[in-house]
Each structure stands twice: as C-alpha cells, then as structure tokens.
Image (cartoon, rainbow, N blue to C red; front, side, top):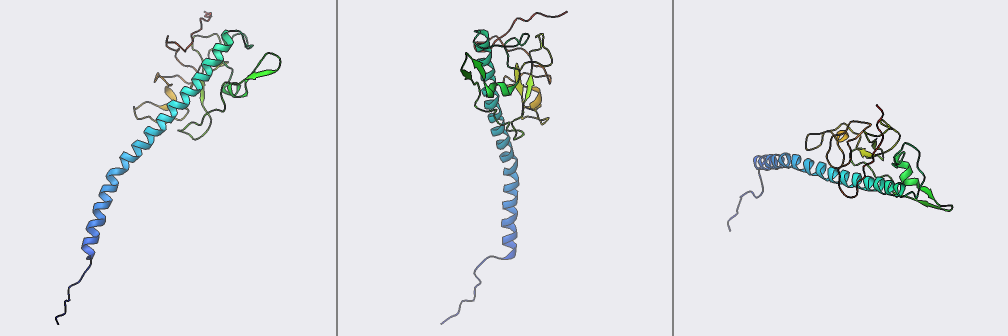
Length: 179
C-alpha cells in the first residue's frame, strides 16, 4: 500500500487572494448600493410631497366652494400643516380632515416640512401654506438641494414658492398686489 501524502486544502496565499478579490468587488458595489438607497428616499420624498400637496389642493377646493371658513387674506390656503391633520369645522357637528397624518420626511426621518407661501399673495412670507419642501440642506442626485425644490422640481426660496403651473388640480388665486 502506498501512502498519499498530498495536502488537501488552501494555502494562506490563496485565502489572501480570494479575500482581496471579494473586497474589491464589495467596494465596487458599495456606491451603487448607496445610490440606490438615495434614489428610493427621493421616490418616497416625491410621494410624501404629492400627498401633502393634494391635501392642500383639497383644502383650497373646499374653501373656494365656501364650505369652510377661512381667514381673510389667506386666499383659501391652510394656515399650517396641522390644520390639514386636525381638520376644520363644516357645519355644526362635523369636521373635515384632509390628511390622516403629516408624512415622514424620508431625508430627515421627522415629520417636519418647510411650508412655503404664494409669492404673489398679500400674505407673502407667511400666513398660509401654498406649497411644502423638504428641509435638509443635503444635495439630491440631480445636484439641487432638497430644500430648494418642490414636487415639480421647481426651485424654491425658503418661506416662499413659485406659483403652481396652470394645470387641472392646482389652483391659482388672483390676489390683489400691494404696491
């Protein structure tokens, strides 16, 4: 009988080479994974913005039809986002809510949004919520800051937003300009 004295297994050099290849592959996949996560957050951000802007539009519709009482000078927009959640009185015994809850901002993980007003309104700089935007100063994949754009991708000035485009579902008021 002959004895086979061959070693079975891997050498240290083979293990180092295999580990090096795995590290190179993992480092190449890391930016792609990070990019995918950011893209998912931006998709969720657009969904949250659309949800709030739809609620603002529904509030505006209800106010324009005279079904709810609004403050003079608000042009029918909600005074804040909490009004959309808490609802407003309609008639003697009922309330209408426009949002179940304020959505989470996926970029911050909080329910805090920057309210923007209609730049052409008489209550410029506050007093009504015409639009919303995400508050972090981080940069999006398209090289703009999250805090400087709304759902349509228009650039915003904190505290005031551009007017809605003339499309069905969005409202433009005709405020009296103070000169």
